[in-house]
Image 1 (cartoon, rainbow, N blue to C red):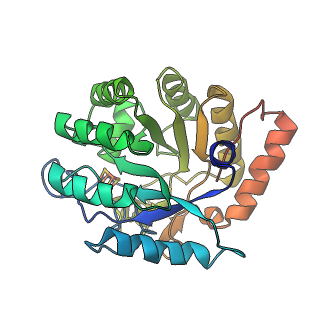
Image 2: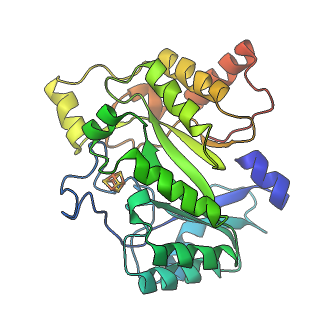
Image 3: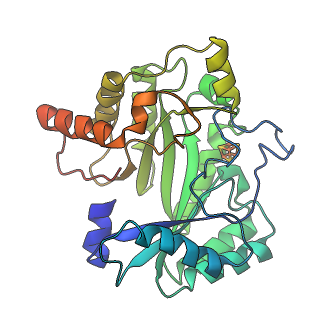
Length: 301
Ligand code: SF4
């Protein structure tokens, strides 16, 4: 992703994790009250700034967090990323107000919205198309897996056909699509994960995130792990092998936005090696060189 953004904008573009204050049909009782089995209380957005109705204030706060990590934080531009929960799960007028505020911020160059494919109504699609005419909009869809048994186990709450229909509609409206997948779901073999990659390779999408399954405290998955009823989490060696095989199965033009994951360390039960991101990335780089996997592909962590 970094490589592609540098090509387009001539510099690194930083992500600001924002909080739209929404919930999710998998949590509010519409589909379920328990959420996806792996989802933490933060709704998979544990790094977003706290919710305020004032989006500009959130942007300024998130900018400060980014600036604290930079040696020279000048002339910086950003992706406004609505990450936590389901960010199209609200009345369209509310969505319009927060997304317009974010996209019209002078230092924001891309609006990225994480959501579920069953939460993009025709009105929302119309809004996204309108926003996309102002600045690029990315829609990040949490697919996780194509396998029905796994989707049922994780309580994803929608069938594959809903995802396919959503991808078609977004594509017809020229909106960029990023698909989130999870590697290491219980009972999924390497072959199963590669089948998901093969399927994704057939879609008119622009990006993918390969996310290692994090088993977190306070989730139902974490409870199964603590009860000892869950099989062992992936080892680092297995993960490195699987993630590289996934990359090898994806078309070279598909931008890979993530190859590890950023689980909150204070909640992480397993796999504990994943908290050492540098180690994971180094191992992946090393193995990719050994296997000559690059083939013109570029990725970001
Ligand atoms: S759809 Fe997203 S926010 Fe909702 S429960 Fe699942 S992971 Fe959490």
